[in-house]
Image 1 (cartoon, rainbow, N blue to C red):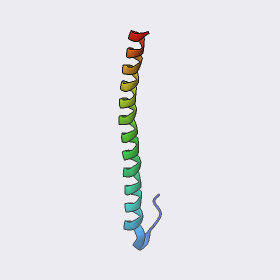
Image 2: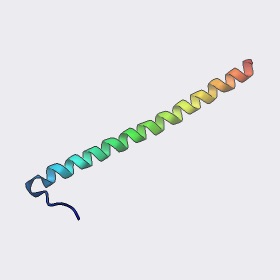
Image 3: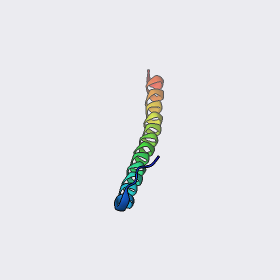
Image 4: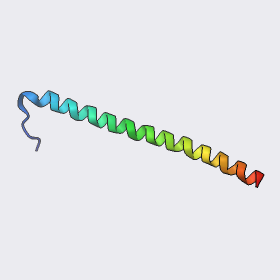
Amino acid sequence: MMPELGKYAETVLSAYAVSILLILGLVLISLIRARHIKRRLQEVETKAKKHG
């Protein structure tokens, strides 16, 4: 099913691998940041409720 890439196979496959790793890295960073922001937002909301 995979097309014949000839002498460029290593370059093309390496580019795909690097692209996938970069995308996964961005997703991971986004998830970590979202968790951090959610925690900070909860802290701010808790403070706001206490000080009404």
